[in-house]
Image (spheres, rainbow, N blue to C red):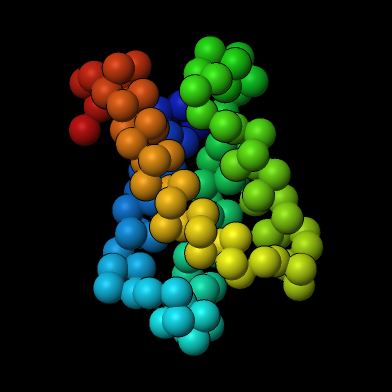
Length: 116
């Protein structure tokens, strides 16, 4: 099994990619681009997958992160792709992901201070 630190780094890297994909993009541009929608959704799936792989004990120690919501979002995106609500994807990417990135980066710094 991979170390927790690596899954947390995956979340930060995916959040950074989402920020890059959405730089200068407004709601209309997001809804007008299948490429951007697909790229953002794929990185949200990565975030959900990484969260799901973290041990239960780790998630229980860090209740400040809404792990179950993150994993549930991933499950909907993967298993119910045709019912994905793109408004929720956009909102999540613009509002929730930056906050999640901040939480995970702080957690990484506290738990793994020697990590690159």
